Length: 88
Image 1 (cartoon, rainbow, N blue to C red):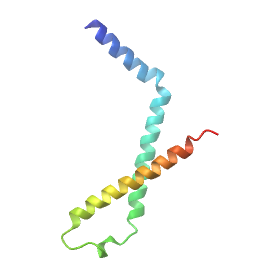
Image 2 (image 1 turned 135 degrees about the vertical axis):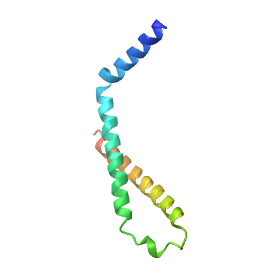
Image 3 (image 1 turned 180 degrees about the vertical axis):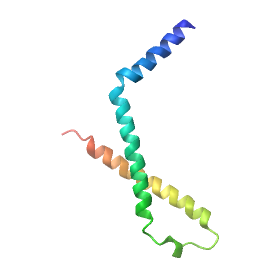
Image 4 (image 1 turned 180 degrees about the horizontal axis):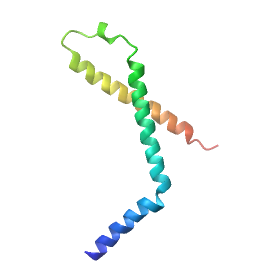
């Protein structure tokens, strides 16, 4: 039982102190992903989908809208993160 607590403590210590740079990069990634998904939703809102949607199919449209915005946001965020972390 004592070894288990020590192991968890060392793992916690490693994550907090030794992984400070890694943790801040994870936070930066999360911020970039959220910003990218929101900007994809904003970009998709310029299309007039109400003219193309059949009556009674709003649930399917919202499912498509969420999947499309998540996909575009993921692609945009991956591009931004790859572009920023290129080492010459």
